[in-house]
Image 1 (cartoon, one colour):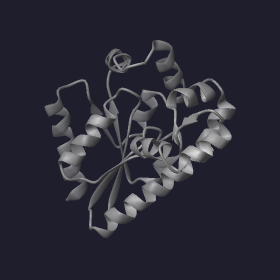
Image 2: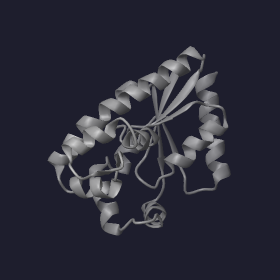
Image 3: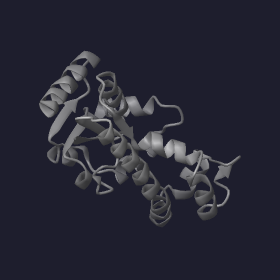
Image 4: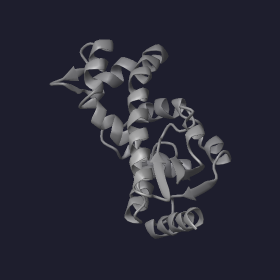
Length: 193
C-alpha cells in the first residue's frame, strides 16, 4: 500500500483536493477532521485540564483555545503534546483498516506534514499550491479570518516554496476544478499501476 501525504499551506486547496481523491475511490485520512472530532471528545477534558476555561459542555471552544495559545509558543507546544499523539493514533487506525481492506493507495491529508515530521511516515508527498494573492483571497473570505490571523498562521507553517521543493508531486490549484481533478487522476494512475 502506498501512502501519499497531502499537504499545503492554508488556503491552497487541500480539502478540495482530498475530496477529489475520495471521489476517485481513494481512502483519505484527514488530520483536521480528526482534530475536530477529538475536540468534541477524547481531547476535550485533557485540553480543559491544561487550559482551564477553553471548553464548554464537554467540547473545546476553538476561539477560546486559539486565544490561549496564539502568540505563545510554550502554550502551543503544550497543546500539540496533547493533540498530536491522539491524532497519530487515529491515523494508525485508518492505515490499518485501509491495509486490511486491500487498498493500493491511501491519502493522509496532514496540513503540518513537514512541521510535525510526518513526511517520514509517507511514501510520496503531494503539495497543493496557489499564488499568494489567490491564497490570501481564499482565506480572508472565511468567517472570522483576519489578515493578522492569517499572518500568524503562515508564520508557523513551512513556507510554500520549501514545501514545493520537498514534494514528489505539485498541483497548482489556481486553475479550474477540472484541471485539478485531471492532475489528481494522473497521480492516482502513476501510484496504482
